[in-house]
Image (cartoon, rainbow, N blue to C red; front, side, top):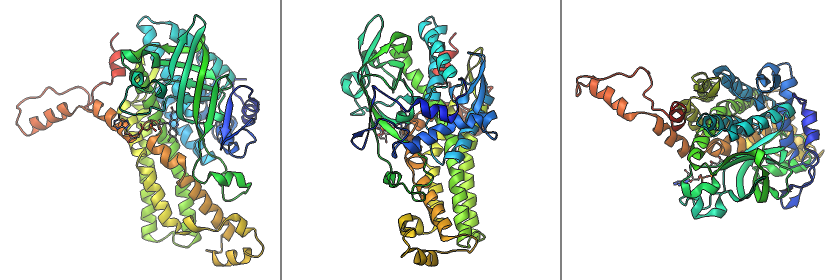
Length: 502
Ligand SMILES: Cc1cc2nc3c(=O)[nH]c(=O)nc-3n(C[C@H](O)[C@H](O)[C@H](O)COP(=O)(O)OP(=O)(O)OC[C@H]3O[C@@H](n4cnc5c(N)ncnc54)[C@H](O)[C@@H]3O)c2cc1C
């Protein structure tokens, strides 16, 4: 069952007995049939279908040296810069099939982050996490498991540390010889209701006093003591209307608040326990992987928006106007900047261990995500301009379907005769729901860390002192300089320093 089909995945998540999942105050038993969550299941399913579709299977499959079989790339440990680039390309491609976030990359990035972190710890003498993790990885790959990644704690007052407000961070409450008990909550967890397992990581660097919060593990979603409260999204009521236009593309992501109420985690699933010194390293590794990926999925959604704006320009006969062409061109430039940066983060990757721990380039990964915090808003603004005010005022599909109103709507909202009024409404709704979505706007700002987090990371890497030395030399304030071998004035991250420390 290494390469599951989409149908096999959907059947696997149909029945849950122990976890409690709530949507708008009511418990949901079958997420695959619930109108609020079904669009998310369909988006998640696309990651499985991609491995069986002719146009995407070569990108969506990878060879695993852990189980000596072909696996779905969403469970793969990156073995080369090309693998990392394939990730970005795959994410762009699947966005075209869903028009939404397909929710499987957080768990994938968590796998790679824990692999590298536990490997670095093993090389420095603490082997048990790595050994456990590799066994877990084999299980995930063999069963093509759907993972969610949970890093973000609820965090309460942001300026207080975990030990100063224990309820605000997931913590270990008891350790036995068989496992650990954890309590707390993780916020904003993408695709949680559609996942089979949660990979949990600490959310920040920790101090010695925060030892109980420095914990990483995996756990099946369907576990006693886990409760999920699914969050609302913009225009989400349209999913409940059983329509076929207003909620287009009828695929979407969802996020949830995940509560761990004294949950038992068997020791073989614990990948960090009290190792507060490595908590910040795990966060640095994970966040860079995740920031690189946004260059793929957000540019993929950008393509959908550019395509919709171009079509709407044609529908109202303005596609040849110079200012419309300039705006479309600007959208492409913004989009390809996000993508190009993600590809650069991949191909200029960093090798952290001898037999192939490939980490993304941390500078380019952070630059990618920083661009993503801005450019989607610009792209959506241009598309709103091109679409016209109808994007905020269009009649509903129920008006179009009302025989008394239909002739008026068809007559008065008709554009170029190549397209029907229904075509226009379909494209307007697609553009509205993708362009103003949580996935394209809010996730672009806060997913993988809010904007300041990337600026801090960029500042840590960029060597201002060296850049100043260059300027001093060229202005002849200083008469000599020791040029570095590398062209980039960059410093090593903490992760690179640890990896190169032998
Ligand atoms: C759609 C979406 C999907 C997501 N999916 C996942 C997921 O699958 N898994 C996961 O683990 N997380 C996920 N996240 C969470 C995401 O990583 C966090 O939202 C992000 O790290 C920001 O954290 P926050 O929301 O708590 O905001 P905060 O960090 O509280 O940020 C709010 C503001 O406060 C500022 N701030 C925060 N702390 C300080 C401080 N100490 N001093 C000064 N200013 C401060 C920030 O810069 C920001 O301006 C998702 C988020 C979104 C929106």
